[in-house]
Amino acid sequence: MTTTGPNSSGTVTQVDAGGEEWLTIDNVKTQSDSYASTDALSKSEETDILRLSNFGFAIGADQIIDGITVEIDGYVSNIDVDDLSVYLHKSGSTSGDNKASGTNWGTSDTDTYRSYGGVADTWNSGYDYADINDSGFGVEFRMKNNSTPARTYYGYFDHIRITITHHTIGAEAYSGKGIDRGINRGIL
Image 1 (cartoon, rainbow, N blue to C red):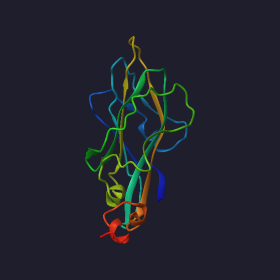
Image 2: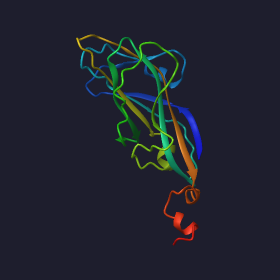
Image 3: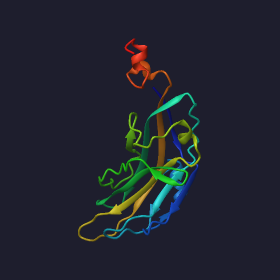
Image 4: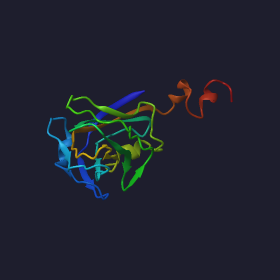
């Protein structure tokens, strides 16, 4: 298997989902300790969607996608704020599994990443090399304040990046994947 990335986003947009706004959103393009932040999140409030795309992948046409890893570096002003949704996105539509962890974010910047997906997890997206290479491919992220009693918190996010794991067509015959594995073993 081959790993490509991690790549950073070239384009960051905010999508109105009836939640609180994201501020200084371009700051998630690089890990620089300059943050994209949420507007004040009161109890049970959610953020709008933070959509990142244009990751600049150039996966070859002879490659099969094995896994997609999204990593997010961030923290919140106090406990009880977690992921509401972490989805893949491609040219106008959200797809695949919601990988939100439901785990509270830390309360200090440690410059470490929280991972979603993995080397053998395609998020049930069905994406191929062309989907990954598309400038509209990316990730969507939302948060929610789950505090009890009601408190107002903020989220601060430094960087979001994506890594793709893939292999060459035909290699699956030797790794036990793919429809031709029986042919190459003399079974069919």
